[in-house]
Image 1 (cartoon, rainbow, N blue to C red):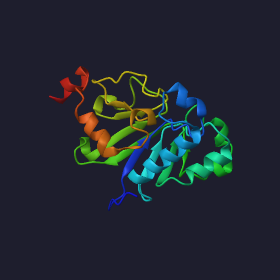
Image 2 (tube, rainbow, N blue to C red):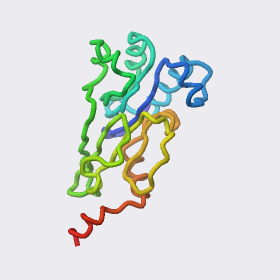
Image 3 (cartoon, rainbow, N blue to C red):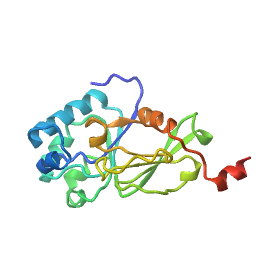
Image 4 (cartoon, rainbow, N blue to C red):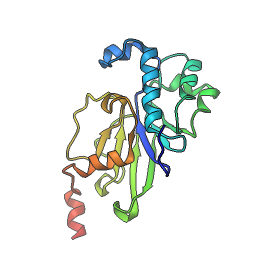
Length: 197
């Protein structure tokens, strides 16, 4: 159990609870879907506290909705879902919807951060990767999933795949992402940097 004094923010995607074939497709180190689910829940709850916010960027599970809700109810944190292509059927279920503070298709998160421009870090959340996104030229981040780590990371773009397969099957924190972004070779586009001088 995490013992952080203040609420933290986490991100993840493409959990695929209950999905046996994802083990083969993505070479996940689990014998069965049940073993995978238990281990993900264990790792999740070791890192995330009950008061933390977790933004899931789609594809929560491929399994019966009742089973999926049972697993989701074991996870620490306040859950928010930016839906993916495999979430459509589940969204019709009222019990599934109740597992989340909200469900959206796209979301702009604004995090107070003294190191960010004007003290706010903008983060575009989407299941799918984008090459250009709102305010990308001003330092906004793009967090995505869907590709299970198969898209090469762009060292010149403030974007990252937050999927389970890229981060040892555990959500990644805002602080961890901030550290990754700080090491990227990013600068504002010429048409913005010229006007800022």
